[in-house]
Amino acid sequence: MNMARHDGPLFAETILQSYIQENNLEKSKYTKSLFRDLKRTTGVQPLQIEEDLTAVAQGHSNKTGKSGRVGHQSFNKLLNHSWGILTTMWERTAPTAMSRPSTLCSRC
Figure 1: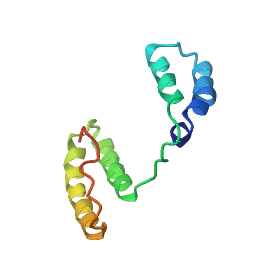
Figure 2: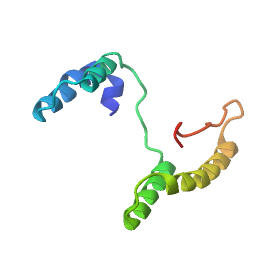
Figure 3: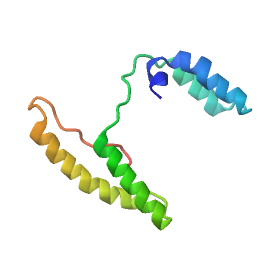
Figure 4: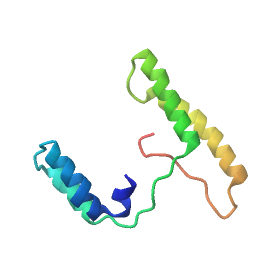
């Protein structure tokens, strides 16, 4: 993922092209769109693991896996609770010039 973010054209020409060929995937509007986006992607900051969010996601996965449920309804409840805790931690530790993050994703 970080290679695609750092050097999209290289990722498209090597990793993605090989993957498409090895899996006999057809060129479609989706693969064409992906190639087009990757060709324009360079120098994006690498993703980094957030330990707190990883723990929340793993807890959700364990809980839903045991119950056989799928979806994010219970995750949103857990996330809202955890987000409140993280927001409190952020407000205590963040410099005053920085604003707190408003949300984790637009779908949550």
